[in-house]
Length: 198
Image 1: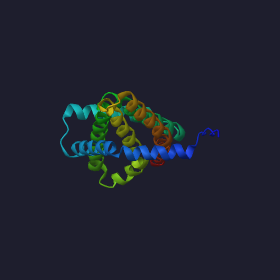
Image 2 (image 1 turned 180 degrees about the vertical axis):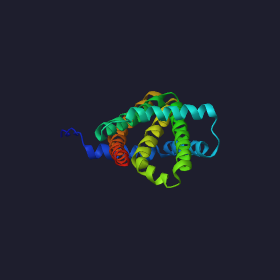
Image 3 (image 1 turned 90 degrees about the vertical axis):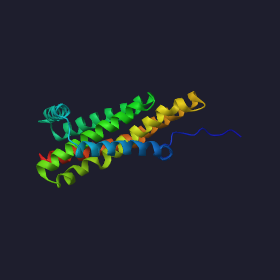
Image 4 (image 1 turned 60 degrees about the vertical axis):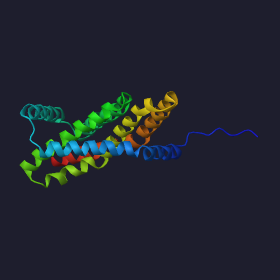
């Protein structure tokens, strides 16, 4: 009896993506831990003046780039930036998982620094104004960087080519079916929220 070829099934792809995330949860937890650790450092400990100046210049540059953008343009801008960060954070994990960890550390530090400045100028309530931005964005980034970290571990497996293929293709599937939708939702919420505040 001839078996029928299995067609492309979106629900199955989605389910397998979540299964791979569950398999990779320890790597994702490591990324979250690094992110939170450096967020605390950025918010609690004094920042050297040179670093503080560089971060503030970077923020000022972002504000100039987004100034005058319509809501749709702002959503697109946010989406493209987050897409690039997440995708390259995942893909560059191939270098022994070093880049995803660095991305997590830098982003955590930046968030902690920005939060500390915002709280000092506008009070603790500013955290609740920033909260909607991260509901979908942060999980998407954590998943991408966690899978990037796992991807870099292929070199330590017994069957290196097979492990690389498994990690790489599963990571791309998760990015397409889980991360991408989260980034789209995050961009819409953040772009709309910023427009309303403006």
